[in-house]
Image (tube, rainbow, N blue to C red; front, top):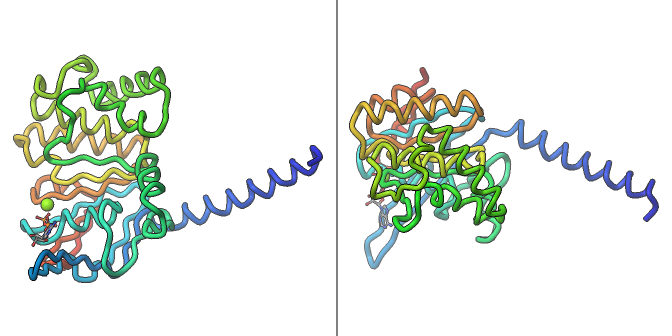
Length: 253
Ligand SMILES: Nc1ncnc2c1ncn2[C@@H]1O[C@H](COP(=O)(O)OP(=O)(O)O)[C@@H](O)[C@H]1O
Ligand SMILES: [Mg+2]
């Protein structure tokens, strides 16, 4: 192809890319329509989500609240694509996760999503910094670059001095900071958190929520936080309350 030809091709590609980006920017960050999730084992059938529809905007901190067993974790797993749905659709920035194969979904999650769980999910045989490096290694980032970025993430959450400690040598609050550093190391557009303060005392829980608020303000990341703690919920921009597999109420600060 001539040089001129290549330039034209590049322009067309860029225009397509620009259109794709504009479409993604206009779409809600998360758009769920009529999501149904059924667990069946043997002759036991649990309809954990009974047609949930929900939109989350870019930069929003959304709280998902409700009593134990109402379907919060199931909703988080279905929205993030960790789990498949029986009916309905989930779009993330306009993309339908169900249309991706497992490899594409894993790559999409590694590049765009961070996860924070109540039980930290840190690998006990890896140091704090090695745990934070993991998502980068999965995404094919070089060892040197991974180390630099993991250290920067640990600094952002205020725990750089414990980089070489194993998880067992850290307190619950410190472990959760490491988990947050790991969730943020790829600069994901969305951070999913399932009871992130569930194992922490109230002072530490407040610090962790403040940290998430700061990160949300600085990077405009979208946070979806499952919590049954009203003080955590009160600090979310918006709360949806679930009961028995449906959203029954919604409030905004
Ligand atoms: N893997 C599973 N197999 C069968 N039932 C499940 C499974 N996971 C969750 N459930 C059921 O789905 C419902 C919602 O669970 P869950 O989403 O974990 O609730 P929450 O996070 O609000 O406590 C509950 O009745 C629970 O027992
Ligand atoms: Mg749960």
